[in-house]
Amino acid sequence: MRFFKTIVIISLPFIAGVASAKCLPDKDKSPECRYEKGDSWCAQNDNKNPYAYSDSCLSKSTKKNKKPPADISGLKALRQNMNYSEARKIIIDAGWQGNNTRWQDVSQYGQDNDIYHNNGWHEVQSCAGTGTSPCRFEFHDIHNNMLVVITEGECSDEGKCDPGVSSWSLE
Image (tube, rainbow, N blue to C red; front, side):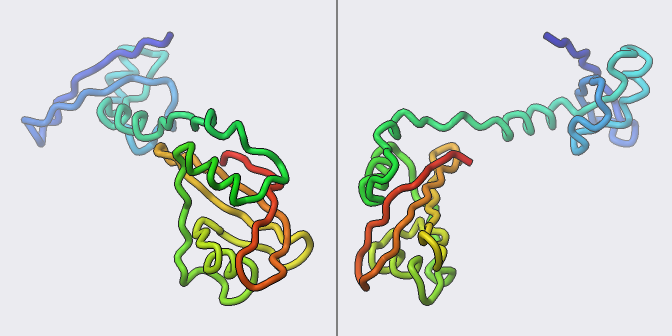
C-alpha cells in the first residue's frame, strides 16, 4: 500500500485560496491534475514523490474513470447460432438496452435498413452486403459497458428476418 503526504498550499494572490495536494512519484500520472506550484514543497519534503497533484481533482478523476464490470450473469443462455430475436430477448431481460441508431444514419438500402425498419431492431449498427452478411448490434448496461452481438445470415425476403448469432463480446 502506498501512502501519500497531503500538503496545504496557500496561494498568495488568492489569500482565501487553499489547495490540498498529494505528492506522487510520476510527473505525468494525471496531467490535468498537476499542481506545479506544490512541486518544490514535495521535492523538499518527500524526495521519492516530488510531483504535486490536486487532491480534489485526483479523487474526481478516479471516481469518474472507475466503471463497475458488466454483469453478464443474465447472459448465460446465449448460444451461438440461436436466432437473434431469442438472443435479443435474453439480453434485454438481463437489463441491457440497445444503442439505438438514428433512422437518418441507416442506409437507405440493404439488410441494416430491412432489420431497422421491418424488425424494429434499432440497435443495429451496420450490416455487410456481401459474404455471410454479418450484422453488428450494440447494447449497453447501466454502467455504460458495451455488449456487441454479431449475426450472420442474409434476409432474403422483404419483411422480417431473423439471422443467427455468430458471436458476442464486451467492448
